[in-house]
Image 1 (cartoon, rainbow, N blue to C red):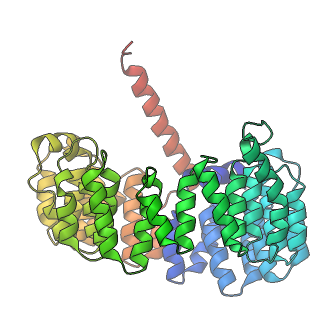
Image 2 (cartoon, rainbow, N blue to C red):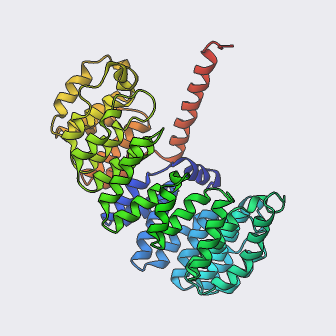
Image 3 (cartoon, one colour):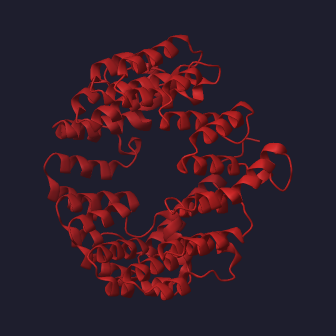
Length: 459
């Protein structure tokens, strides 16, 4: 088993797509995943197989799947193997497997995983000791916060975080603490979960006022929302730094059933803000969540022909489609300005319109439109034809069309179609192996390099 191949799969969403793995699990096809993990050395399939087998209590079989991957020393596989052993009750074997080695490039991930497995084994203090003995950079701080949540060790964690946070507050320019700005957020988070909410809020408010740390305003607003301090949150949401607080305020009001106030607040900002786009988008989302679809469209339709900034046409279409209102989403594409169409028709609008036509029972009309255009003018033409054939109820034609096509786009559409037909073994067989996917990627980048070399320089 090649570690480089595993790293490539991890970093490039390579191998069998996660969506297919999830579908196989949902339909009880664990054996297909086990076979693919062994035969294809596919990391996604190994993860899915382990998930399914552990859920069924088949820990020995799960270990048989993950052991060859863990034996490579690749950290994600090592951690997955340790989790299987831990669930199996083989605690010492799990700890030995995940105990950090000397590979510096994996240092943080290895110590994070080791601490989490220690906590899983009930050795919380040992996990804290392991992390406290490391250089406390921001990732280690957040690991410390995460692994101790709900473990009854908040006061000990605060003893570690407190001195670091005070150093940052007293002199944030110090080279030794400049990279530890998140210590402020980490301290506030632990104070909150320890029940020391007034202290957490006081520190958070002071940090926001002094502009300490990245996103302090947003964190202050989010904390007020979690604590139910709506009156104080309103002060922020109507003040000079309201951008950071508006979403938290609106969502807090909505959670309390005070949606009319939330809507009025957003409409007021839309009317008065110099750049209202963010507030218009939040208003669109709020009204959609309330099922007021026509009000939502009316609130933002004045943006639909904007060529550059602030256009909410696609956002409105996506939200309507998510509610099953494909016909209404399709209507929004009609009557668009020539200037807007010149910039967006071929870029995204046309393909979305064809998909919506298919979902609305007009796939044949969409096919007619598509086939009337010159082939070179339509990106992903052949996979789009296949998708529309399937939407028109001609699934076998679509499958045959896709099988004859090369490239990732074609086989991903094919896999999706086969899954929807319940043809799971065919779906997994339609996915090229990792070597073939890597070769396709190399060819893609090589074509791009050749194209750049062939383009005359503008200089």
